[in-house]
Length: 108
Picture 1 (spheres, one colour):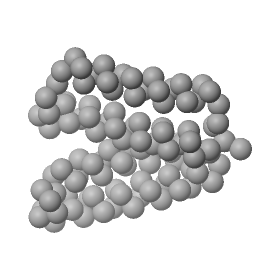
Picture 2 (cartoon, rainbow, N blue to C red):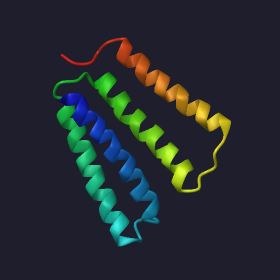
Picture 3 (cartoon, helix red, strand yellow):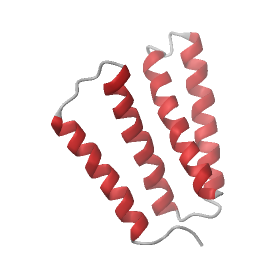
């Protein structure tokens, strides 16, 4: 269950980042409200997952989902520049997170 909470928390972090961009410096009401909702929910779910999972692994997974998801959606739907270097860098993030999981530390 903790892993599901963690994955959902990571997805909410992606939504938080996209709302942050759409809020235009918190000048747009709905994206600003969305940012607040997704931020609180994401941190809350992360906090619940950390009751079971090791912080080193869980935080890396959470950040990894947020970074890769945000970058991918930024390139796919928000018009961010797409380059081979960016895609390779994102692959390294995924490899690092998978490596941490394979090294152990899923939970206690």
